[in-house]
Image 1 (tube, one colour):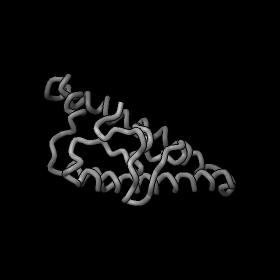
Image 2 (cartoon, helix red, strand yellow):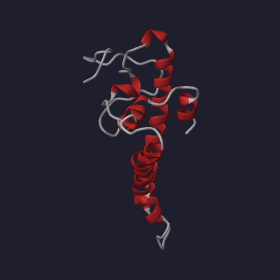
Image 3 (tube, helix red, strand yellow):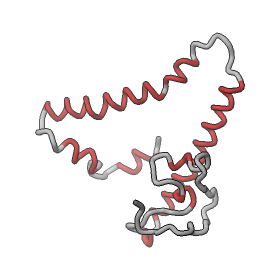
Length: 143
């Protein structure tokens, strides 16, 4: 939650949003477009993703083993996401890595937004800051 404001403070608009919003003329039409396409879509996704938690509020009995197993899996995923974020921040802070793709540690997993799930999906994630290069991977780009 702290990383996004820290990363974007003083930076120009995200190029993806700027490109998307450039399709609509300035003024109230752009505001309505952003509300509809960006904010309402995000609100719907948050609502959908939080449905299990919402449903759990109405259970007549305490959480069972399956709920605790799901919570443990979530904690493990959160841990690996935090480790991956730290590794990526250290990688990007090194000027020698400018323009390169991180392909070590948690970055060695699949090139998707769900890289934090690499351990569960069979990818390799090292929790140490010193990792060996991945075999057969290029540091320049991924397809």
